Each structure stands twice: as C-alpha cells, then as structure tokens.
Image (cartoon, rainbow, N blue to C red; front, side, top):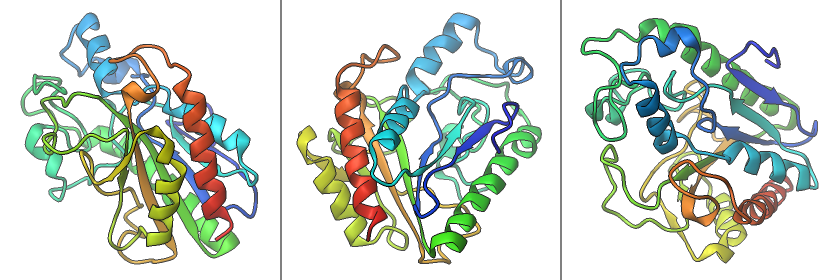
Length: 266
C-alpha cells in the first residue's frame, strides 16, 4: 500500500489505535492517460481543480496525527477525485449520478462537460476505484482484527458559497459540518466531534453534505465500524477557491487531534 506508484497511501499509526483518518479529496494529481479523456483545456482544468479539491486536508490530517497521544492511521488518496471519486457508490445507488458526478465524473462543479458524452468510465473504475476500495477495506479489517473496532474519520472541506453541482446546497453551511450515518455514527462519536470543533463558530449535522464513508464490505453490516465525516468550510482555514492555507489550519489540526484522542480511548 505504501508503493509510490499506488494511487493511495496507508500511513501506519499506533498498533493499538482504532482510528483511520481518511483523506480522499486532497490531491490535484491527474495522470497523463486520464488527462487525455478530459475535454477541458489546461486553464479550465486548473480552475476546476481549485473548486473540486479539498485543498490542504492532507496537511490538516498529518498535523493532527503528529499531535495525537495515540497516533491514528491515515489513508490518503494520492490522485484527484477527477480520476475517480472513491467515496461514491459505483452503481445506480449514487444520487450524484444525476449531475454527472458518480464514481467517474462526466460533468464539472458548474455542470459543464468534463468528459465526452457517452464516456465509458469502467476502465477507470477497474484501475483506480476497485483497488482503492479493496485497500481501504483491508485497512479497516486489520483495525478490527487488531483492536476489535475501527473508527473512520473522513477529512473534507467545502466552499463557503454553494456550487451548481450541489444537490443540497440550499441548507445551512456551518464552519464545520459533521456527516453522520444512523448505523455507523454512534452518539458519543458525534458528541466528541461537536466538543472538539466547538471553537470555530458552530457545527451542524448533515448540511450541506450528509453521510459518511464506510467500505461496502462493512457498510450497514458491522457495528464495530464507526464513521464520521468532518466537512470544514474553506474560509475557516484557506483562501478560496484554491489558494494557500492560513493560520486556521493549525487550529483545525489541534481540534482534529482532540477528536482522535477522545475516540481512541473510548
């Protein structure tokens, strides 16, 4: 999993830690063969990457991990979500298919053409999505075997103003949105996150983005797998849409470390 040619990287944590910080959308990297299937010119692609990338979230997760009493594991996507989005359902269950943003995106954040009409993304799913899903499944299974439970904390960010692709962009946009799942997000995990991020001006639940990521092998089946999505509004820590991080990054890393330590010892 740590092969530099892989599209993902598993960074080991403490043997006794149940926590996996999952960072799926932080990279801007698009391999040349994948780039050839994208119709945008280079300038438009850079603009799209500014909007779609959860910039600096890998840095937030890394800084948090370094500050934790018990180091969490980190699973980081090394490629842009414009290659594949590892958090989408790979089939008709995915509601984002309605705006061309299933596992393989065909439309942009502004609902413009990203890939040609009729594009067949099955080769990208086979090459990138399926190995990623298998590796994440293995990482969760390993935590279950080692410590009897796993806690996936998904680290994301979202724009201050809604983008046209958002299906639920008319709801509240708090500084920190916590995505939860009825089966996989126990109340104590949600409450720990609310306490950890209380200093940023408020948290909200499932708005503007809802749910959380659990590998399909465990999803809705294994209550030992806890999960929470942390969606950070980008003006809290960076210049939008794709600019540098500011001092908020360190403060967020402190809060994320507090959350990890709280759930590591439950």
